[in-house]
Image 1 (cartoon, rainbow, N blue to C red):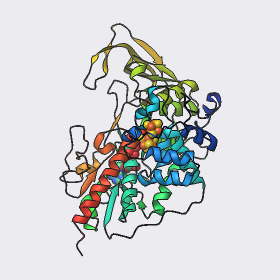
Image 2: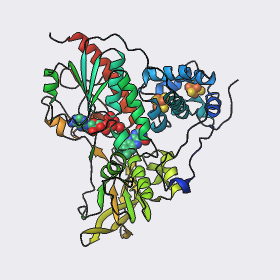
Image 3: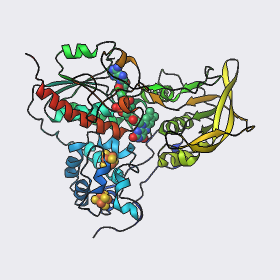
Image 4: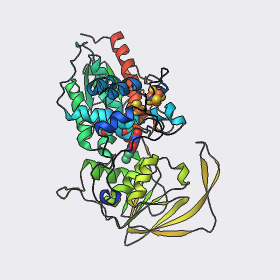
Length: 464
Ligand code: FAD
Ligand code: SF4
Ligand code: SF4
């Protein structure tokens, strides 16, 4: 009989008053007993509605059934058959909008904690010394992947599983994309990302770092070097700014810069060479996961106080509800319905943020109610450090260095459902196509493109 309790089995977390001073993981993960008990809430629905919410097609009831029966390696085999990064997805997938949003248990009570169980299964597997799955016979086909974020890594894993030779070219000195340089250690420990990348290496995927494609090599040169198909998963790493007076003052940073200093360059460790901003009164502008991550990093870096300023109300915050709750528990203040209009400073350094109150008006093109400034509602916030987290767009380098690639007016690559771009043999997916989105959507796109690339390479064998 399934466990009919209405609530998920709670996940242990670090105490907010302790964790706000450290970079250790906040959520501690299920024990074996908790994972088995939570899997016991699944009704094993024959129609599998949850699966329709998973962009990489995990067979959710099958992996949950294996957990219930304590066949954990079998559960891992089901997960990893379609998901190259299960320990990552179990932590950062917006499950509440994906698989769990379709779970029938959510009609009355909370859905099954699919993500939490996925995390348990992947961590348990990664902690053991399980031997890697046998490699398929080589096909002789050769594919190049540009970018080692979730889109590129997933595409690489799928192609390797089919027996193709795969090389990933990454511009930075470490692989993982946003998983490595963006999402902080306390949400996604880097050892976990590295372990998932190691699993791909064991499958034969070659990863070449410090390779900026478009500068060091071009897409045309990759084809000339014998790669039959190329996948572009270069993300959307170019930060947007507010374009208000005072944004050039010292002490104003993009969230990307702060997070890269912290996550990739480990600036919070005493022996790091990378300097950190003076935090003091820190104001973060934006309302997504990036804003929450930047705010929570600022707290841990010793800011006196941290305020997140957002033009709409709390209901419209695009960040995951769990992340907003964690941020507030740690002491981050939310200043909703607030629009920054000018940054003011002394001696070239920012000191204050001039803001207006807003109210919500009619829905805009995005369907969300647009913020309307309230006249004569000016006020100032003290601001020794301002972090801008209002979105990113794709870096233009690759598209300008690659003739024949169509892009839209936002600079995103245009690709069809299967990831095919306007250039034969070149496929694309993830944030480079959609603009800033989510890990699992990038992975879904990488997976689809891998299947299209497989068909393309088989139809266009290399000339010998
Ligand atoms: P990326 O992860 O951006 O990877 C692209 C890679 O390509 C990078 O490593 C880059 O260096 C490399 N590259 C770029 N240009 C070149 C080039 N010319 N040559 C070679 N390499 C190149 N999503 C969630 O689902 N849940 C979350 O909780 C979440 N939190 C987030 C927190 C932060 C701080 C940020 C920034 C994003 C977050 N996201 C989250 C969004 C998610 O991380 C992205 O949607 C996802 O990483 C996109 O994957 P991608 O592979 O398309 O690109
Ligand atoms: Fe759900 Fe993400 Fe796992 Fe798919 S990969 S089952 S969407 S947690
Ligand atoms: Fe289990 Fe929910 Fe999926 Fe049904 S919808 S199989 S209860 S996880």
